Length: 508
Image (cartoon, rainbow, N blue to C red):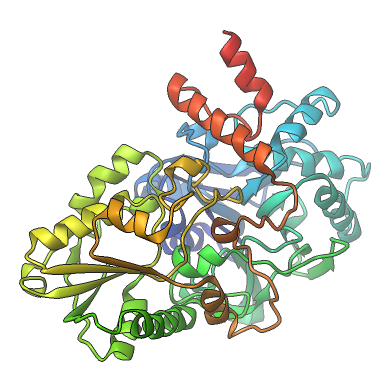
């Protein structure tokens, strides 16, 4: 669940890219990178592991010359923390291309083999993003011309759509040409385009994972890049767009609205903040219906995504909402920390209970979702240690029972607390006095309200229905085995579903 940005302007873009990445920092804390092109057609690249503020110092920003650039913050979905996995990626042929990618390819293994055996292209990392840029480059190389035309670029992306599967929102720079942004035919990962006019009526364009990044930099949001669509902005600031997929369907990821996206963002015409308010309203009404005899004294959000949800639940229940947990804002988001041990140790460092809000009270804790359950168990313990009489827990999302293969780090189904368990079993594990989950239909209604044109969301973590239609039980089992083998042998995680790699390691 990475964050991506691209800007083509009339003035240096280095500071704007840095500012945009800080706005998108919540989407990835593992690494950050920026690549720019200057007037002499030279790439300037800086990327490393760490937060944006740590990767880029003043000297680095100054060296990122040029009026066109792309940036990336990485959230690792496969467990490899090498700096070589950081983006943007770069290939020198044809023309010189640099690319950033948010998502996950589900047929990366087959693509890797085809590229190395038949395409004669070398893949140097275990990242599926490097596979993606090489496929894009391979299709562009078929046009043996010095200057690409928009139809050449759109034709390459049309071919790319036919070749790859999974989730991908991408921004690429082509040396001497401009910026191209494109989105997978199911629209799983978000991508938004904006425009601003600066002095002397000069136009600049920006694409980003979330509208909040555009807002901060003063870009007016034009629209979402459509599923399957490609948008090309050349060096003359001329904008071209084309639908490159035959049967595009808008199936945005539901978890964007539940957890990942900033509340001040609008994705696919849906306000994240408003959708979370409606989640709270739906869940509050369910609590009234299911827990008629419960004496709840106070509603307490588990910071910070659930705060808006909890405020609405408190309004529905006519109970006070209090900030019972104080958050250390200098600790990263624990869900997107890649290692389970790190997540466990970070919870106590991240949250501290305000004991006055718990002592001798029946408290309703509200969280956006429950994934592995380890965090929930610790937070329930913290509430009891602070003096709560009864601790009830409400989740704004339904039970997460299935792995995500589109860019969220839940590949190991055995790590999911709700997998093959009923609500009462989950309640006992996390030691809550009562537990309630949002109904999936209510969640869909809460999010879909702003954009009724969306008929289906990507909800595979809740219902096991994978919109790309290429995921089955065998795929998930092989993914699980490969992930276990990677942890056991401390090996880099190669392309997902790479069962031949697993067999090779076992033979050794």
